[in-house]
Image (cartoon, rainbow over all chains, first blue to last red; front, side, top):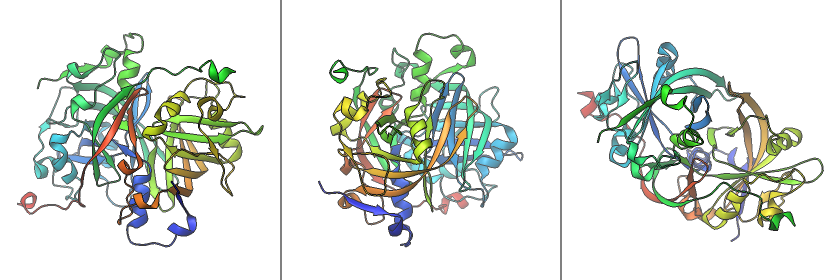
Length: 210
Length: 210
């Protein structure tokens, strides 16, 4: 298969959204999540993110990427003010509503109400969970890192996890397929996940030592 | 469906690798990539990473997470010294070899030779690409951010992309399924991607304005 090469000269010539979509999909596909927060006026907010990354298990830390705050970012303002947010996995059954939360709603308008997703509150959390989500995380904000282009890495600690215990494997791994997980590349292309295989911890083979 | 709740008291009691696997899979599934570098002695290195994130399109920036440098991290040392690295998508046909690169090889041993993947060199790059990979990116290191638990966000700029042009959609999106993309959750659970649907840019509906 002959591959074509693209380089800086190609994408400095802008062609509408072409290169934006290209680079948004270049990093591969990942599980989309809804991040829930509440502002000081009691208005709840839900934002769709596709940049969740594992940072460590002890303590459990997760990161996600926030776009530049040159336009109002309700999620950012709320989680900085309250210190709390929730992360809710998007499953196939709530995909339409989850995607719809990415529309630009007014600050006074809750994406929950606008899309028909239900708020769920648990003791000790000051941010709303998504009732219909199969895997829900309570998070405490820990730190942020400003990247050279104005995006931010937001780092938080997991304080609680709600999920169906039956979908946890003996080794502790969560079965995403059993949780109806989807995967998104860029902002618009959604995929189904099909389990392929569980690999073992890799060790150098005797071959490679010869 | 009744969900169970887990919280800090549950995971501070360690049970082998249980909670490590739990938190490694909690962030969902994503496309694994091989990062290629070369050290000053001319030994090539390949490392398997599952934390690639899109940071921006203008200029094109990608990030990935490096674990704490308390043990030698060849990828980190090499890319800091040379400024160059490559990112190579893992497709189904090279999954076994890609996973095998995660074995702990000696610094003097190239994961290319050890696993049977072939080096590919292009003009202007001082890091090796993976010949068998369907989507290959030439990268320049830009900056790093040290996270509170010792992990690092490595930020790089895309300087070249090699892929089959026929897999780029009219809007610029890359068709990952046509590139035989796989998806990994945690370190061991691999999935196939099946295209589900392409959504549109979401707008507030008249319903939600009532």
